[in-house]
Image (cartoon, rainbow, N blue to C red):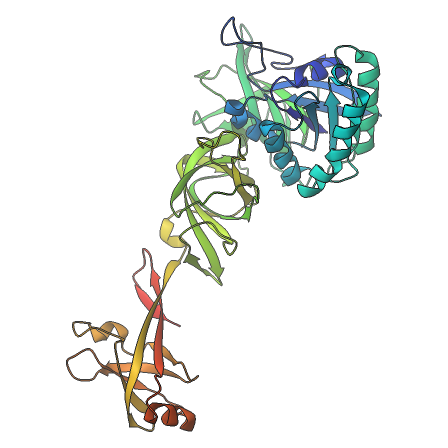
Length: 480
């Protein structure tokens, strides 16, 4: 299992990771400060491990500072469970909320809440905070049965760690990993070892890998053979889906590699700059998100900006919305640069440059449903409406209306388009009548007697033309 350790800055995440772990991996327990006046804080992902009930657990220590949320978003793609630490002196802080949101999206059924620094306030206050936690979890749709542990990692480390291990034991489960059979790995660190080659560490997210396998490194457009596979500093015959591994490769041409993916030659991974995704809004984000907004999109271990087109599914066509709303079913993402990904991969959208620093920055999430080679592969339209008034009846099957078109209208565009009368009949446009923009409307089934009476009595009978105005399409308009 892979368990993320989450929480606001200075809540005790790295202290917990170090106390829990029996072995450290890449960047484990590292703390860095930007100046001598700043307290040392974790600025990158740290990986370590422990074993509980014969289950090897990889702990992912995530940074808690708001500016480092990209690293947390990247790591969250491999979470099987989470430990969320809350500093009882401060309660639930902004990053605590964002991290709990990630838990609610990814692992709502497998979470441990740790209330830390409990020795610094009275037991009554600790209990008051503890009682509020289930309600907060319920509001985020995280299991109300999530274990809640009160600890003091600095003053009572042994007692605290024992309680946390007991709580983690309650959420251990066997993740349901469905493999395509082709190796794909989310890489989090890459570094050279003098005289040996290059090591890439990360989590296997699909298939398995063995020594001798040829892999692609798409960010470098290079291929390499795996010389050796290690897991937690032990050489292993293979790395399987869910495992954290280190792959030894021949020297790669560049060490300018951050978080990326690598995969087996022939894996079902595609390069895409456009993708259609399903969408679920995050209710805690309360600001408008207009059409064509540029948001930060996290897919796998990559985060980039993308222009967002908000859509509502209409069969195999999509109506464009002016903003993200409750009727939005899909988003067309136009990424700032291509990424390698797979269908059904999770995406998360956020406004990381938001001026609302104390509010939720996560906007929505969903799954990739289609990788698109050209924008016009997604048939999009705006709804347009034109309304006219019946002026008179021409015969039992046709009538004349005004105000539906202007006198300069090219009627060839609209001939034979479907229209609807406010009295219930449907008909079609059959050219202009005169030169003032009036139109002849034909009702094949015949005009209803009640409609004739309404027209004769002078009551307005409306004629509505409902249009789909398509983007990037040879068929510019259609009626429905």
